[in-house]
Length: 473
Image 1 (tube, one colour):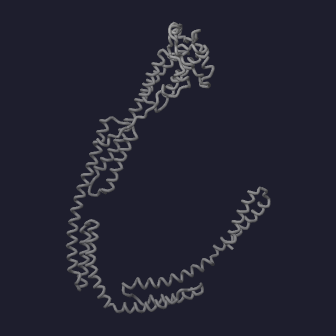
Image 2 (cartoon, rainbow, N blue to C red):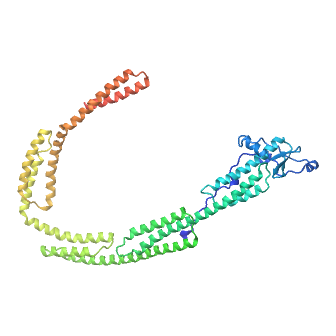
Image 3 (cartoon, rainbow, N blue to C red):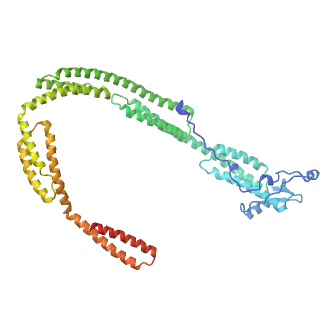
Protein backbone atom coordinates (compact mmCIF):
# COMPACT_ATOMS: atom_id res chain seq x y z
CA UNK A 1 0.00 0.00 0.00
CA UNK A 2 1.89 3.02 -1.29
CA UNK A 3 0.45 5.65 1.04
CA UNK A 4 0.93 3.51 4.15
CA UNK A 5 4.71 3.23 3.63
CA UNK A 6 5.39 6.48 5.39
CA UNK A 7 7.60 5.60 8.35
CA UNK A 8 7.00 7.16 11.74
CA UNK A 9 10.59 7.62 12.95
CA UNK A 10 10.99 6.90 16.61
CA UNK A 11 12.89 9.60 18.49
CA UNK A 12 16.07 8.38 20.12
CA UNK A 13 17.02 9.68 23.56
CA UNK A 14 20.33 9.17 25.30
CA UNK A 15 20.23 6.68 28.15
CA UNK A 16 20.99 7.62 31.72
CA UNK A 17 24.43 6.07 31.61
CA UNK A 18 25.21 7.99 28.38
CA UNK A 19 24.21 11.36 29.81
CA UNK A 20 26.81 13.80 31.02
CA UNK A 21 28.06 12.79 34.44
CA UNK A 22 30.18 14.76 36.92
CA UNK A 23 33.79 15.12 35.85
CA UNK A 24 36.18 12.33 36.80
CA UNK A 25 39.82 11.54 35.87
CA UNK A 26 40.32 10.34 32.32
CA UNK A 27 40.58 6.54 31.74
CA UNK A 28 44.30 6.81 31.11
CA UNK A 29 44.82 8.33 34.56
CA UNK A 30 42.50 5.99 36.51
CA UNK A 31 43.45 2.68 38.15
CA UNK A 32 41.74 -0.50 37.12
CA UNK A 33 38.75 -1.46 39.32
CA UNK A 34 40.42 -4.60 40.64
CA UNK A 35 44.16 -4.07 40.75
CA UNK A 36 46.52 -7.03 41.37
CA UNK A 37 47.30 -7.99 44.94
CA UNK A 38 50.49 -6.77 46.70
CA UNK A 39 52.04 -10.20 46.10
CA UNK A 40 51.56 -9.85 42.38
CA UNK A 41 53.20 -6.44 42.47
CA UNK A 42 56.17 -7.96 44.23
CA UNK A 43 56.66 -10.45 41.39
CA UNK A 44 56.13 -8.04 38.49
CA UNK A 45 56.36 -4.24 38.40
CA UNK A 46 52.94 -2.74 37.84
CA UNK A 47 52.50 -0.07 35.20
CA UNK A 48 50.06 2.25 37.03
CA UNK A 49 49.35 5.60 35.45
CA UNK A 50 49.42 8.74 37.52
CA UNK A 51 46.02 10.25 38.32
CA UNK A 52 45.20 13.71 37.20
CA UNK A 53 43.87 15.99 39.89
CA UNK A 54 40.12 15.46 40.37
CA UNK A 55 37.91 18.19 39.01
CA UNK A 56 37.04 20.64 41.78
CA UNK A 57 33.60 22.05 42.34
CA UNK A 58 31.73 19.04 40.91
CA UNK A 59 30.88 17.67 44.33
CA UNK A 60 31.05 19.38 47.68
CA UNK A 61 33.68 18.41 50.19
CA UNK A 62 30.88 17.24 52.49
CA UNK A 63 29.61 14.82 49.84
CA UNK A 64 33.08 13.44 49.22
CA UNK A 65 33.80 13.07 52.96
CA UNK A 66 30.46 11.33 53.51
CA UNK A 67 31.33 8.77 50.82
CA UNK A 68 34.92 8.36 52.10
CA UNK A 69 33.55 7.28 55.49
CA UNK A 70 32.69 3.91 53.92
CA UNK A 71 36.25 3.14 52.76
CA UNK A 72 39.91 2.98 53.66
CA UNK A 73 43.31 2.67 51.96
CA UNK A 74 46.10 0.45 53.29
CA UNK A 75 49.81 1.18 53.12
CA UNK A 76 50.13 -0.57 49.73
CA UNK A 77 47.57 1.76 48.16
CA UNK A 78 44.81 -0.88 48.10
CA UNK A 79 41.36 0.68 48.42
CA UNK A 80 38.58 -1.09 50.39
CA UNK A 81 34.89 -0.34 50.82
CA UNK A 82 32.61 -1.44 53.68
CA UNK A 83 29.44 -3.27 52.73
CA UNK A 84 27.45 -3.95 55.83
CA UNK A 85 29.63 -6.04 58.16
CA UNK A 86 32.09 -7.02 55.41
CA UNK A 87 34.87 -5.24 53.58
CA UNK A 88 35.66 -5.57 49.88
CA UNK A 89 38.70 -4.60 47.87
CA UNK A 90 37.77 -2.23 45.01
CA UNK A 91 41.15 -1.27 43.54
CA UNK A 92 44.71 -0.23 44.12
CA UNK A 93 46.33 3.18 43.76
CA UNK A 94 49.95 2.88 44.96
CA UNK A 95 51.42 5.98 43.31
CA UNK A 96 49.08 8.40 45.06
CA UNK A 97 48.50 9.38 48.65
CA UNK A 98 45.85 7.61 50.68
CA UNK A 99 43.76 10.78 50.65
CA UNK A 100 43.92 11.05 46.85
CA UNK A 101 43.09 7.37 46.36
CA UNK A 102 40.16 7.45 48.77
CA UNK A 103 38.83 10.71 47.27
CA UNK A 104 39.01 9.26 43.76
CA UNK A 105 36.94 6.21 44.63
CA UNK A 106 34.50 8.34 46.62
CA UNK A 107 33.99 10.54 43.56
CA UNK A 108 33.43 7.42 41.47
CA UNK A 109 30.69 6.50 43.93
CA UNK A 110 29.17 9.95 43.52
CA UNK A 111 29.45 9.57 39.73
CA UNK A 112 27.52 6.32 39.88
CA UNK A 113 24.91 7.83 42.19
CA UNK A 114 24.59 10.76 39.75
CA UNK A 115 23.70 8.25 37.02
CA UNK A 116 20.93 6.86 39.21
CA UNK A 117 19.70 10.36 39.96
CA UNK A 118 19.76 11.16 36.26
CA UNK A 119 17.65 8.12 35.43
CA UNK A 120 15.20 9.13 38.18
CA UNK A 121 14.92 12.52 36.50
CA UNK A 122 14.49 10.96 33.06
CA UNK A 123 11.66 8.78 34.37
CA UNK A 124 9.74 11.98 35.10
CA UNK A 125 10.27 13.20 31.53
CA UNK A 126 7.25 12.98 29.21
CA UNK A 127 9.38 11.89 26.24
CA UNK A 128 11.34 9.02 27.81
CA UNK A 129 11.12 5.78 25.81
CA UNK A 130 10.67 2.21 27.00
CA UNK A 131 13.80 1.06 25.21
CA UNK A 132 15.79 3.83 26.87
CA UNK A 133 14.51 2.73 30.29
CA UNK A 134 15.42 -0.93 29.63
CA UNK A 135 18.89 -0.06 28.34
CA UNK A 136 19.57 2.24 31.29
CA UNK A 137 18.40 -0.33 33.83
CA UNK A 138 20.54 -3.02 32.23
CA UNK A 139 23.66 -0.87 32.33
CA UNK A 140 23.04 0.36 35.88
CA UNK A 141 22.33 -3.19 37.07
CA UNK A 142 25.81 -4.20 35.90
CA UNK A 143 27.46 -1.10 37.37
CA UNK A 144 25.76 -1.41 40.76
CA UNK A 145 26.17 -5.18 41.13
CA UNK A 146 29.68 -4.93 42.65
CA UNK A 147 30.85 -1.39 41.96
CA UNK A 148 34.50 -0.41 42.36
CA UNK A 149 33.65 2.69 44.39
CA UNK A 150 33.78 3.93 47.96
CA UNK A 151 30.47 5.01 49.48
CA UNK A 152 27.19 3.82 50.89
CA UNK A 153 26.79 0.79 48.60
CA UNK A 154 23.65 -0.42 50.40
CA UNK A 155 21.92 2.91 49.89
CA UNK A 156 23.06 2.90 46.27
CA UNK A 157 21.56 -0.55 45.66
CA UNK A 158 18.37 0.40 47.50
CA UNK A 159 18.06 3.44 45.29
CA UNK A 160 18.52 1.23 42.23
CA UNK A 161 15.77 -1.14 43.42
CA UNK A 162 13.43 1.80 43.89
CA UNK A 163 14.34 2.97 40.40
CA UNK A 164 13.46 -0.46 39.03
CA UNK A 165 10.00 -0.26 40.58
CA UNK A 166 9.53 3.30 39.35
CA UNK A 167 10.74 2.30 35.89
CA UNK A 168 8.23 -0.56 35.68
CA UNK A 169 5.42 1.85 36.61
CA UNK A 170 6.69 4.32 34.01
CA UNK A 171 6.77 1.61 31.32
CA UNK A 172 3.19 0.70 32.19
CA UNK A 173 2.24 4.36 31.93
CA UNK A 174 4.01 4.66 28.57
CA UNK A 175 2.25 1.57 27.24
CA UNK A 176 -1.10 2.93 28.39
CA UNK A 177 -0.39 6.32 26.83
CA UNK A 178 0.68 4.71 23.57
CA UNK A 179 -2.46 2.61 23.50
CA UNK A 180 -4.54 5.76 23.98
CA UNK A 181 -2.53 7.59 21.31
CA UNK A 182 -3.01 4.73 18.85
CA UNK A 183 -6.75 4.68 19.55
CA UNK A 184 -6.92 8.43 19.00
CA UNK A 185 -4.91 8.16 15.76
CA UNK A 186 -7.25 5.41 14.49
CA UNK A 187 -10.25 7.57 15.38
CA UNK A 188 -8.80 10.61 13.59
CA UNK A 189 -7.87 8.63 10.48
CA UNK A 190 -11.32 7.01 10.52
CA UNK A 191 -12.87 10.48 10.36
CA UNK A 192 -10.82 11.22 7.24
CA UNK A 193 -12.08 7.98 5.69
CA UNK A 194 -15.68 8.77 6.62
CA UNK A 195 -15.44 12.20 4.97
CA UNK A 196 -14.16 10.54 1.79
CA UNK A 197 -16.97 7.99 1.90
CA UNK A 198 -19.55 10.75 2.40
CA UNK A 199 -18.20 12.55 -0.67
CA UNK A 200 -18.36 9.32 -2.69
CA UNK A 201 -21.93 8.67 -1.53
CA UNK A 202 -23.07 12.21 -2.45
CA UNK A 203 -22.08 12.02 -6.13
CA UNK A 204 -24.89 12.80 -8.55
CA UNK A 205 -26.08 14.95 -11.45
CA UNK A 206 -25.48 18.19 -9.52
CA UNK A 207 -21.96 17.32 -8.39
CA UNK A 208 -19.32 20.00 -8.84
CA UNK A 209 -16.59 17.66 -10.03
CA UNK A 210 -13.73 20.14 -9.79
CA UNK A 211 -14.67 21.16 -6.25
CA UNK A 212 -15.13 17.54 -5.20
CA UNK A 213 -11.74 16.61 -6.70
CA UNK A 214 -10.16 19.42 -4.65
CA UNK A 215 -11.84 18.04 -1.52
CA UNK A 216 -10.52 14.52 -2.19
CA UNK A 217 -7.06 15.97 -2.79
CA UNK A 218 -7.24 17.86 0.51
CA UNK A 219 -8.33 14.70 2.33
CA UNK A 220 -5.42 12.77 0.82
CA UNK A 221 -2.99 15.51 1.95
CA UNK A 222 -4.56 15.35 5.41
CA UNK A 223 -4.10 11.54 5.40
CA UNK A 224 -0.40 11.85 4.55
CA UNK A 225 0.15 14.58 7.13
CA UNK A 226 -1.57 12.41 9.74
CA UNK A 227 0.78 9.54 8.93
CA UNK A 228 3.81 11.80 9.35
CA UNK A 229 2.73 13.60 12.52
CA UNK A 230 0.99 10.98 14.65
CA UNK A 231 1.86 7.68 16.31
CA UNK A 232 2.18 4.66 14.05
CA UNK A 233 -0.98 2.55 14.16
CA UNK A 234 -1.20 -1.21 13.76
CA UNK A 235 -0.67 -2.40 10.18
CA UNK A 236 -3.99 -4.27 10.09
CA UNK A 237 -5.93 -1.15 11.10
CA UNK A 238 -3.91 1.05 8.74
CA UNK A 239 -4.48 -1.32 5.81
CA UNK A 240 -8.21 -1.57 6.49
CA UNK A 241 -8.64 2.21 6.72
CA UNK A 242 -6.57 2.79 3.59
CA UNK A 243 -8.64 0.23 1.70
CA UNK A 244 -11.81 2.16 2.60
CA UNK A 245 -10.25 5.51 1.67
CA UNK A 246 -8.87 4.18 -1.60
CA UNK A 247 -12.25 2.63 -2.44
CA UNK A 248 -13.98 6.00 -1.95
CA UNK A 249 -11.45 7.70 -4.23
CA UNK A 250 -11.89 4.99 -6.84
CA UNK A 251 -15.66 5.46 -6.72
CA UNK A 252 -15.19 9.18 -7.32
CA UNK A 253 -12.68 8.71 -10.17
CA UNK A 254 -14.91 6.23 -11.96
CA UNK A 255 -17.96 8.48 -11.61
CA UNK A 256 -15.99 11.47 -12.88
CA UNK A 257 -14.83 9.52 -15.93
CA UNK A 258 -18.41 8.54 -16.70
CA UNK A 259 -19.48 12.15 -16.31
CA UNK A 260 -16.67 13.30 -18.63
CA UNK A 261 -17.74 10.77 -21.27
CA UNK A 262 -21.37 11.90 -21.01
CA UNK A 263 -20.27 15.52 -21.23
CA UNK A 264 -18.28 14.80 -24.38
CA UNK A 265 -21.32 13.12 -25.93
CA UNK A 266 -23.51 16.11 -25.02
CA UNK A 267 -20.96 18.51 -26.50
CA UNK A 268 -20.82 16.57 -29.76
CA UNK A 269 -24.61 16.58 -29.93
CA UNK A 270 -24.71 20.31 -29.17
CA UNK A 271 -22.17 20.91 -31.92
CA UNK A 272 -24.33 19.06 -34.46
CA UNK A 273 -27.44 21.05 -33.44
CA UNK A 274 -25.61 24.39 -33.66
CA UNK A 275 -24.13 23.59 -37.05
CA UNK A 276 -27.68 22.90 -38.30
CA UNK A 277 -28.84 26.25 -36.84
CA UNK A 278 -25.97 28.03 -38.61
CA UNK A 279 -27.02 26.45 -41.90
CA UNK A 280 -30.58 27.76 -41.44
CA UNK A 281 -29.27 31.20 -40.49
CA UNK A 282 -27.20 31.39 -43.66
CA UNK A 283 -30.33 30.59 -45.70
CA UNK A 284 -32.25 33.42 -43.95
CA UNK A 285 -29.61 36.15 -43.86
CA UNK A 286 -30.45 37.59 -47.33
CA UNK A 287 -34.22 37.69 -46.74
CA UNK A 288 -36.00 41.06 -46.93
CA UNK A 289 -39.12 39.84 -45.11
CA UNK A 290 -38.05 41.84 -42.09
CA UNK A 291 -40.79 40.91 -39.63
CA UNK A 292 -41.12 37.20 -40.41
CA UNK A 293 -37.39 36.64 -40.70
CA UNK A 294 -36.76 38.52 -37.44
CA UNK A 295 -39.09 36.10 -35.67
CA UNK A 296 -37.29 33.14 -37.27
CA UNK A 297 -33.93 34.46 -36.09
CA UNK A 298 -35.36 34.82 -32.60
CA UNK A 299 -36.49 31.20 -32.78
CA UNK A 300 -33.03 30.16 -33.93
CA UNK A 301 -31.56 31.99 -30.95
CA UNK A 302 -33.88 30.14 -28.55
CA UNK A 303 -32.86 26.82 -30.09
CA UNK A 304 -29.21 27.84 -29.81
CA UNK A 305 -29.56 28.48 -26.08
CA UNK A 306 -31.31 25.13 -25.53
CA UNK A 307 -28.71 23.20 -27.54
CA UNK A 308 -26.17 23.29 -24.70
CA UNK A 309 -22.43 23.88 -24.85
CA UNK A 310 -20.05 22.34 -27.33
CA UNK A 311 -16.89 23.27 -25.41
CA UNK A 312 -15.43 26.74 -25.06
CA UNK A 313 -13.29 26.77 -28.19
CA UNK A 314 -15.96 25.08 -30.32
CA UNK A 315 -18.69 27.37 -28.96
CA UNK A 316 -16.71 30.53 -29.72
CA UNK A 317 -16.10 29.47 -33.33
CA UNK A 318 -19.71 28.33 -33.88
CA UNK A 319 -21.12 31.50 -32.30
CA UNK A 320 -18.96 33.65 -34.59
CA UNK A 321 -20.48 31.90 -37.65
CA UNK A 322 -24.04 32.27 -36.36
CA UNK A 323 -23.46 35.88 -35.37
CA UNK A 324 -22.06 36.66 -38.83
CA UNK A 325 -25.27 35.43 -40.50
CA UNK A 326 -27.52 37.21 -37.98
CA UNK A 327 -25.58 40.46 -38.31
CA UNK A 328 -25.86 40.32 -42.09
CA UNK A 329 -29.65 40.18 -41.82
CA UNK A 330 -30.12 42.70 -38.99
CA UNK A 331 -27.65 45.16 -40.51
CA UNK A 332 -29.57 45.01 -43.76
CA UNK A 333 -32.80 45.57 -41.85
CA UNK A 334 -31.28 48.52 -40.03
CA UNK A 335 -30.04 49.99 -43.31
CA UNK A 336 -33.57 49.81 -44.63
CA UNK A 337 -34.87 51.49 -41.50
CA UNK A 338 -32.28 54.23 -41.90
CA UNK A 339 -33.59 55.00 -45.38
CA UNK A 340 -37.18 55.11 -44.16
CA UNK A 341 -36.43 57.14 -41.02
CA UNK A 342 -35.79 60.50 -42.69
CA UNK A 343 -37.14 62.38 -39.67
CA UNK A 344 -34.49 60.86 -37.46
CA UNK A 345 -31.82 61.94 -39.93
CA UNK A 346 -33.19 65.46 -39.93
CA UNK A 347 -33.13 65.43 -36.14
CA UNK A 348 -29.53 64.29 -36.30
CA UNK A 349 -28.60 67.24 -38.52
CA UNK A 350 -30.28 69.68 -36.11
CA UNK A 351 -28.50 68.21 -33.08
CA UNK A 352 -25.16 68.24 -34.86
CA UNK A 353 -25.72 71.95 -35.54
CA UNK A 354 -26.39 72.47 -31.82
CA UNK A 355 -23.22 70.54 -31.05
CA UNK A 356 -21.23 73.07 -33.07
CA UNK A 357 -22.67 75.86 -30.90
CA UNK A 358 -22.05 73.92 -27.68
CA UNK A 359 -18.48 73.01 -28.53
CA UNK A 360 -17.76 76.67 -29.31
CA UNK A 361 -18.44 77.49 -25.62
CA UNK A 362 -15.28 75.73 -24.49
CA UNK A 363 -12.64 76.03 -23.29
CA UNK A 364 -13.53 78.53 -20.53
CA UNK A 365 -10.81 80.52 -18.77
CA UNK A 366 -12.31 81.38 -15.40
CA UNK A 367 -15.32 81.15 -13.14
CA UNK A 368 -17.12 84.06 -14.79
CA UNK A 369 -16.72 82.52 -18.25
CA UNK A 370 -17.89 79.19 -16.86
CA UNK A 371 -21.12 80.75 -15.57
CA UNK A 372 -21.82 82.33 -18.94
CA UNK A 373 -21.06 79.06 -20.74
CA UNK A 374 -23.33 77.16 -18.33
CA UNK A 375 -26.27 79.46 -19.12
CA UNK A 376 -25.70 79.09 -22.86
CA UNK A 377 -25.35 75.32 -22.58
CA UNK A 378 -28.61 75.11 -20.61
CA UNK A 379 -30.43 76.80 -23.46
CA UNK A 380 -28.82 74.46 -25.98
CA UNK A 381 -29.78 71.40 -23.90
CA UNK A 382 -33.40 72.55 -23.68
CA UNK A 383 -33.59 72.94 -27.46
CA UNK A 384 -31.77 69.57 -27.81
CA UNK A 385 -34.46 67.78 -25.81
CA UNK A 386 -37.26 69.25 -27.93
CA UNK A 387 -35.81 68.00 -31.24
CA UNK A 388 -36.56 64.30 -30.63
CA UNK A 389 -35.00 60.96 -31.62
CA UNK A 390 -32.00 60.45 -33.92
CA UNK A 391 -30.80 57.26 -35.64
CA UNK A 392 -29.72 54.67 -33.02
CA UNK A 393 -26.23 54.29 -34.45
CA UNK A 394 -25.55 58.01 -33.92
CA UNK A 395 -27.18 58.42 -30.54
CA UNK A 396 -24.21 57.56 -28.34
CA UNK A 397 -21.77 59.51 -30.48
CA UNK A 398 -23.57 62.85 -30.26
CA UNK A 399 -24.57 62.40 -26.63
CA UNK A 400 -20.91 61.85 -25.75
CA UNK A 401 -19.90 65.04 -27.55
CA UNK A 402 -22.47 67.09 -25.63
CA UNK A 403 -21.42 65.47 -22.34
CA UNK A 404 -17.81 66.39 -23.06
CA UNK A 405 -18.76 70.09 -23.24
CA UNK A 406 -20.64 69.83 -19.96
CA UNK A 407 -17.67 68.16 -18.26
CA UNK A 408 -15.24 70.89 -19.35
CA UNK A 409 -17.45 73.61 -17.91
CA UNK A 410 -18.04 71.66 -14.71
CA UNK A 411 -14.31 71.19 -14.21
CA UNK A 412 -13.79 74.97 -14.06
CA UNK A 413 -16.81 75.33 -11.73
CA UNK A 414 -15.46 72.69 -9.38
CA UNK A 415 -12.03 74.30 -9.28
CA UNK A 416 -13.56 77.67 -8.39
CA UNK A 417 -15.60 76.05 -5.61
CA UNK A 418 -12.57 74.40 -4.08
CA UNK A 419 -10.74 77.73 -3.94
CA UNK A 420 -13.69 79.38 -2.22
CA UNK A 421 -14.37 76.46 0.15
CA UNK A 422 -14.63 78.06 3.65
CA UNK A 423 -13.84 74.76 5.39
CA UNK A 424 -10.53 74.50 3.53
CA UNK A 425 -9.61 78.07 4.56
CA UNK A 426 -10.52 77.25 8.17
CA UNK A 427 -8.31 74.17 8.18
CA UNK A 428 -5.45 76.17 6.67
CA UNK A 429 -5.83 78.95 9.25
CA UNK A 430 -5.94 76.49 12.15
CA UNK A 431 -2.76 74.76 10.96
CA UNK A 432 -1.02 78.14 10.60
CA UNK A 433 -1.94 79.07 14.20
CA UNK A 434 -0.63 75.71 15.45
CA UNK A 435 2.68 76.11 13.60
CA UNK A 436 3.14 79.67 14.91
CA UNK A 437 2.58 78.52 18.49
CA UNK A 438 4.98 75.61 18.05
CA UNK A 439 7.69 77.92 16.63
CA UNK A 440 7.33 80.26 19.62
CA UNK A 441 7.70 77.31 22.00
CA UNK A 442 10.78 76.09 20.10
CA UNK A 443 12.37 79.58 20.40
CA UNK A 444 11.98 79.39 24.19
CA UNK A 445 13.47 75.88 24.34
CA UNK A 446 16.44 76.89 22.14
CA UNK A 447 17.16 79.91 24.31
CA UNK A 448 17.09 77.81 27.50
CA UNK A 449 19.04 74.81 26.16
CA UNK A 450 22.76 74.58 27.02
CA UNK A 451 23.53 71.18 25.46
CA UNK A 452 24.82 71.88 21.95
CA UNK A 453 23.55 68.58 20.48
CA UNK A 454 20.04 69.03 21.87
CA UNK A 455 20.08 72.68 20.78
CA UNK A 456 21.04 71.71 17.22
CA UNK A 457 18.21 69.17 17.15
CA UNK A 458 15.70 71.82 18.28
CA UNK A 459 16.97 74.27 15.64
CA UNK A 460 16.56 71.60 12.92
CA UNK A 461 12.97 70.98 14.07
CA UNK A 462 12.34 74.76 13.99
CA UNK A 463 13.67 75.02 10.42
CA UNK A 464 11.32 72.24 9.29
CA UNK A 465 8.25 73.90 10.83
CA UNK A 466 9.22 77.27 9.31
CA UNK A 467 9.24 75.59 5.87
CA UNK A 468 5.71 74.23 6.55
CA UNK A 469 4.52 77.72 7.58
CA UNK A 470 5.95 79.30 4.45
CA UNK A 471 4.31 76.62 2.30
CA UNK A 472 0.77 77.38 3.51
CA UNK A 473 1.01 81.18 3.46
